[in-house]
Length: 401
Image (tube, rainbow, N blue to C red; front, side, top):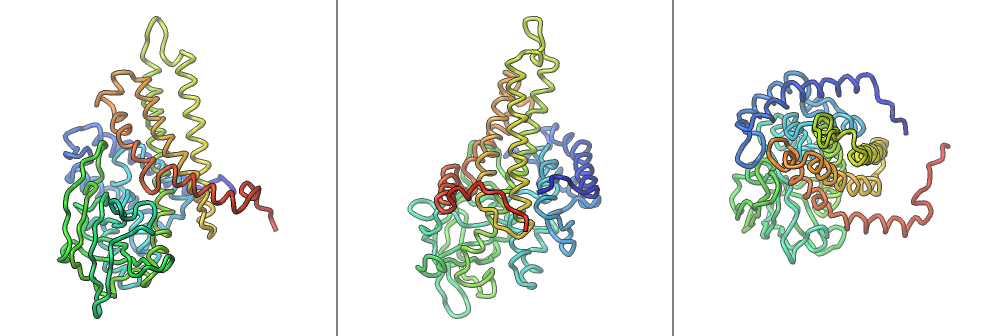
C-alpha cells in the first residue's frame, strides 16, 4: 500500500484541524458547555454542528447525496484522527458512534425508501440512532449464537420479545436497528429490523451508570414486549442479520481506532507541553531520561497503531474484509489509548488526576475501549483462528501479478 495522501485529502484534514483548534477546543475548555454526563451540552453542540456543516465538514463518511464527502476508509482514517484531537470532535462533525456506523450500514444496505426514511434524518442531524444487539446473560454478547430476543412472524408484521442492554445512545435515539432471532438456523437465524422510538411494545428499563463519560443517550437496558415491526422495515432480508452485523461492526471497530488515535495524540500533546515547563530538583521533566522514554515509546506505539489502521482501511477500500487487520488494530489501539492516558497522567502528576485537563476524562473513557465491539480476548481468539487456517500465510506479503 501507498501511505501518500492526495492534496485534496490533506487540505480537508487541515481544515478539520483548524476547526478543532479554533472552534471546538475553546468550548471543550469551558466546563459550563458540558452536560451532566461529561459530554458537550446540547446548545453548544447545535452551534458547532451548524458551523461545521456550513464549512463542508459534515458527515464526511457519507456520499454527497446524503450531505457527505464520500470519503473511503483511508480518507476517514486521516480525518477522524484529526477530529478527535478534541474529546467533542467526532460528534460535532456527525462522525461519532453509534450514529457513524448506523449511517454507513444504512447507506450500504438500505433500500432507497429506507435510506430516505431512516438514514436521511440521522445524516441531517435531526435525530440520533442506536444499534440494539447485546443481551444480558444468558443471552448473546460477543457470541450472537446465544441471542434470545425473538421476532415471530404475524401476518405482515414481526412481533419482538426480549431483553437487551448496554445499548449506546438509546435514551436520546429516535431510529433503532434491532437484531433479533427469527429461527434457530446457525447462519440464517438472525434478522435486522428498523423501528422508531414512538413505536409501542418496548421501553427503556434504565440508563446504566458507568465509570466513564457517556455518549449522548448513555448506555441503556431495554425490554421488548410485543413490539410490532412491519416486514418492510427489515434491513437487507430475513435471516441476514449476521451479515448486517458483520458489515456494520467491522468498519465501526476501525473507526473507533481512528478516533482513539486522535485521543492518544492529545494525551502526548498535554504530557509533552507540561513536561516542557515543569521543573523539579533543578531540571525540567522533559530533560529527564525516564520521561523521554515514556513519550518516545508512546510516539512509537501511536505510529504502529496508525499503520495497522491504515492497512485495514486500505484493504477495505480495495474490496477486502480486513477481518484480521481490523482485529489487530482494535487490540493495539484500544490498549494504546489506555496507556497513553495513564502515562500522560503520570507525567502531569496530581494535575493529570484532576479535572484541570481532559486526561482524566480520556482515562475513564479509555477503559471501555478494550471491551466495546469485541473484547481483546475475543479478537485474539479470532486471530488465532486465522493463524490455524492460514499457517505461515498469516504473514504473507501479497505478490503483484
